[in-house]
Every structure is written in structure tokens, then in C-alpha cells.
Length: 155
Image (cartoon, rainbow, N blue to C red):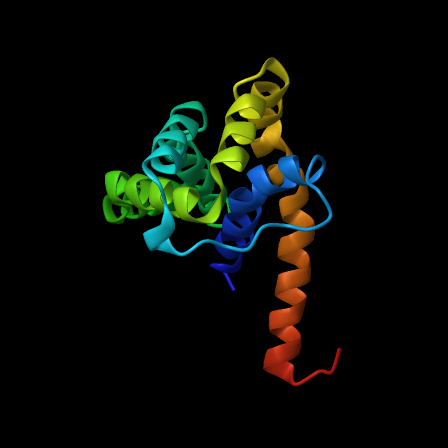
């Protein structure tokens, strides 16, 4: 159960650009693109988006959040173990590819425009506070679900 906060956090932090963009998105979303269909333009825009919204900072935020579910004395050890095993450059490369293949050039440009704006930067800066405020509720619900699974309780 101790690793459920990581799952919740990763789900929340990975959806932040989508949450912000959904407010402006049309009712029908474009289908997910195949990896082979990412254009040079999409890759360049995805790289630019990563300059504005670096994945390393999001990973560090996730590591901090995960460590909070452990006793204070164990947190430095947990953080060190996570950092040792995360290959930041590889994650960034994969994230850029994933962005380029899942978002159109128009969507990537909209993300850049938004997250590059004062409002977008403000929202991005407040995201970890938002996640921190939501985390206790999610953890409580997930812990209950795991307990129900272990005890055979029906929802």
C-alpha cells in the first residue's frame, strides 16, 4: 500500500497539461498518433515544451511526494534510491517522443503558448500545491480499496 501514493501522484502529474488544455479543447479529441507519424515539427515543438515544462522538475516533485509516505528518517534513503534508479535523460527523451506522437503540432503549439504565458507559468508553479492538497484524499480512498480487496469486502 505504501506505493499507491506514487501511482496516484504519477497519474495526477502526468495529466496536468491535459487538465489545463481540456478547458479550451473542442468536444471531440484527435486520435492518438502512431510513433512513426511524429514529424520533425512535432519533435521540435515537444522539445520546446520540455524547456518550458521540464520533466526533471516533475519527477523531483513526484519523488518528494512519494517520500512523504515513509517515516521521516527513511525519506533521504528513499529519495536517494529513487534518484539512483531514474535515468532522467532517458525519461526526457521518451517524454519528448511521447508528446510528439500523441499531440498534433497545433496542440503542442497551444501548450507552449499556454505554459509559456504568465498564467501558464503560474498554474504550473501551483500544480505541486494542488497535488499535495489532493493527495490525502486519494491515498485514503486507495488504502480503503486495497483493504477491501484484502478482506474481500464488496464495494
